[in-house]
Image 1 (cartoon, one colour):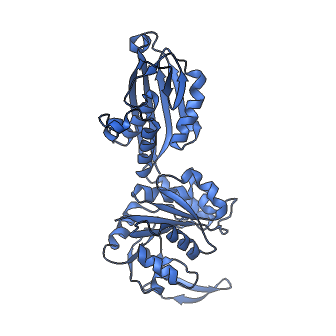
Image 2 (cartoon, one colour):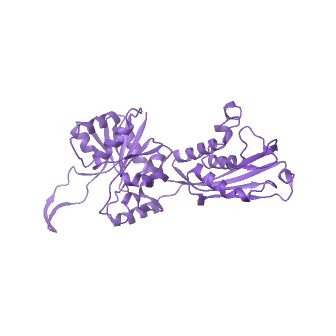
Image 3 (cartoon, helix red, strand yellow):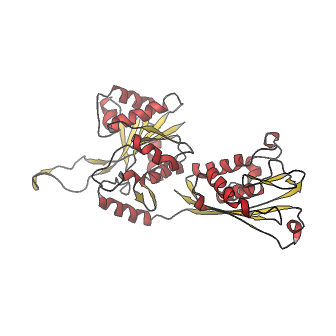
Length: 378
């Protein structure tokens, strides 16, 4: 059953202050919005539609790909949600989670509770029961005590059968505080599921400090993978290394384009994910991969990492050969790999060494490559 995610992040967040809207401010080294996206990626949900202020869409570039896309948000929260739902129309979506981009700490158990609740009803939303005494205030003084019985603090994501909430928004006359208000106006039965005290909404400057403390107590999932590959020389007038054709008096033999550097890096990513190697995903017995460009394999590995909620923190490739000389081409190789991986070139290293005329590389019978990669859960 296909489940999409809508993340509403078109607001300006004036109460937070700062040069950027709060969803673009940095939390634990990454934009707030990146944390929210990472939670849903980790849950394996896609597509993820970001409803953004038109001025912010160019800023979202590094967050896109792997099932993440953008739409222009509206002048109100409800208008932004309607825009995102319209973008999902006709795509076979059965369920949708609608989330505030200013809530970066949504947990996997909460997502699971919401999806389970949709098995028995059209709508569900997380909430935390109010335990503190409540007052109504006026002019800086307590005006009255307010009974707290039956009161809840609402959270997001809020979960719905797609067609039900789409119809509810189409019928709603104006703005709404959240999507539960829209659903109730349409007569939908909304089930309350247990919320999470850590699922805070960033509203005031002090909220960032609290979120940093929560993240500091969360164990990080860091994966390291290694890859190794070898290809022998054969007829040709160039070798393809890390996506760059290098003129040479021979070529490299292989089922695909024999890009030994890219193959090693691809296997490093698969290894970090514990998903085998290139041969598992692209069997050499399959003729469709004969002569294939190796960027196909590397893009697939990077997409698998993203789909499982990991960001590529760095990649390091070492090419072992006497010839051709790698140095003049190393910078182009770095930028080529960075473009395929959709990361900054400063996170990619390509270097070369010889084997001091020892072994098959020393005899110039072929080229070897070693690669390592670090993946960090988003």
